[in-house]
Length: 181
Image (cartoon, rainbow, N blue to C red; front, side):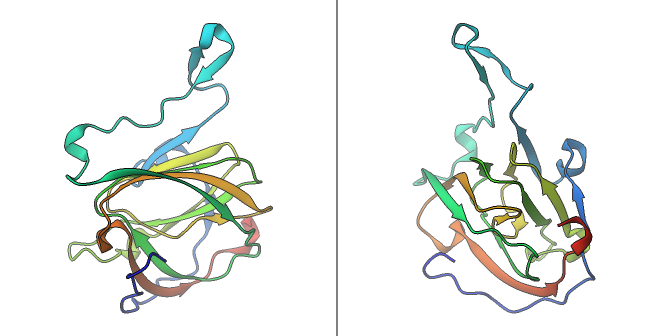
């Protein structure tokens, strides 16, 4: 939790949530899937593969913001605890890309008309260690949840030093289906 951010009022829990394998089509309402491997294009005279992640236009970046790049070291969470909170970044998209590990679980929710999480859209996805994502601006999501092994993640977002950089909301608790973890 970022300094100055407190968990604000709990929201009711929908039901136990099944974790499904991520696909580009299933994740599209929440952001962009980022995958390494055969995707991308040849670079550096054929000695590398280039994977362009996301291009930010100047209009997408709030004035006074700076690009913050971090490495998160996530402790394995298996079996996963219940989901009791979500966070969002209203000023920026957010890139999260694993730098190893054994995979991770991503829990996401659209915002409702009032800006709070719309738990009817709550979804959970299983990602491999070679799959990351770019969350859409303002998307509610659970923090990084490494499964199978501890893992490191490259994280990037535009931040301006206000509470809008990371808004946190209590939910649930919502249990994840254990048969896929």
